[in-house]
Length: 152
Image (cartoon, rainbow, N blue to C red; front, side):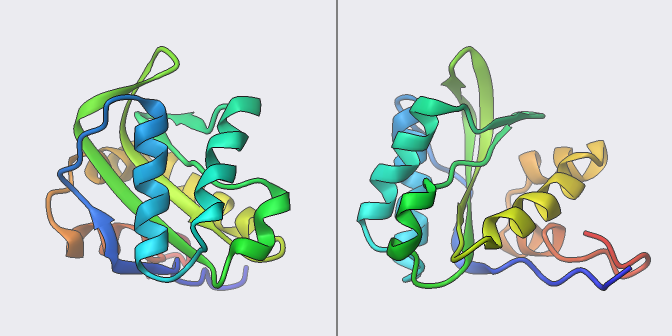
């Protein structure tokens, strides 16, 4: 099995004490974190909201992974993820979300990012640790490949 690559997470795209009025505000904040590290153009955020209208990006375990539509690929400058933690939770169409992980990827890069994030979220201990993290370095560590077995 090929070694898992580190996720493209700039520590400046990690925000651990956010609050959001609603789902759309939370999505905008995930997009703003991607914009702040130069990963996307501002138009990408609109496509993140557009995607949410067609299919929910809530994935379970209190986590949503908002990302833009295929039409937005030209608005992506480089692959990146953002992690925005909402300690008080956000109503996400009836689900409570405490972590939003924004994704921006050129080409089909989002498929790899989603697959790697799924590996983390399938591990209840790592998913819980991510939801409860209060330190940026801890978030970055949680989103790196697991050195023992080559997985995330």
